[in-house]
Length: 307
Image (cartoon, rainbow, N blue to C red; front, side):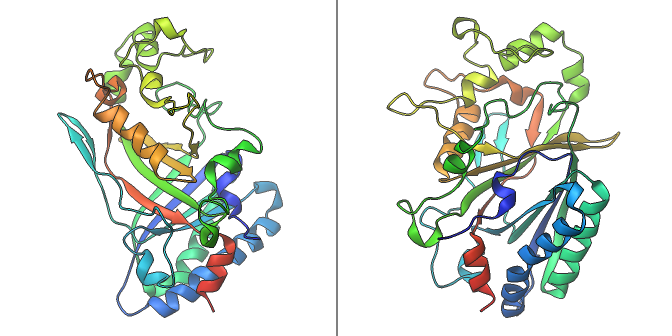
């Protein structure tokens, strides 16, 4: 039975270090072997710093998958869905590899990130890195709780992981979408709290969701809390974290799912809106600067890469 990467469904951490790489030419064989060794590296440091609750993920970019694993391809793996409507934009970037490192210690994340870069060596170029952190009680820098609708308990695995019926060869893997949002906090913080709450359709301090009749069609919750044709909630597992310094602040949005479709539906609902053109007004205060699609394979598939 295939085993998932622990970091996909792990509980939230205090610190995150997110690495984006592009592969260099003629190093594919070396890179396959190196990637197969990353889970053991995670295990080594998770045991050494057991109090840090280290969790990691290795994911392969949609455009790079066939080169790194030509034997087969996840059924629904496809490029990030670039979208643009008026001033609402979701750009698409092509990254070959993504390494996610999360724990409750920033120094441990730094150590593990250093070891990952040493392991991959000259086979890759590090093109982006984001250091992120937990803010207060799991809030975004806007001050609102992030990921309130996340699945809990065993349901996390049901939502995030491909099962045997969906794609036997890639069961226990996960489709991953990442966007780095940059917030305009000066504009956001110039608003009254009630106006901010109306944009989310949730209270800021107590994190209480508005009643259905009080939610504007343009509210963030209205745009992302979608139902399927049977009236069931469309879910993703968010592992997002805030990032920033005194100059730039935002959210690294990280979403895992057993299919790319739920994320794509939510993104379209935010940007294109509904049949009446009601888009997500939160996008007046934050802008996606990147967007990329990956697949996080099972530990079994990662091990096969090194054979």
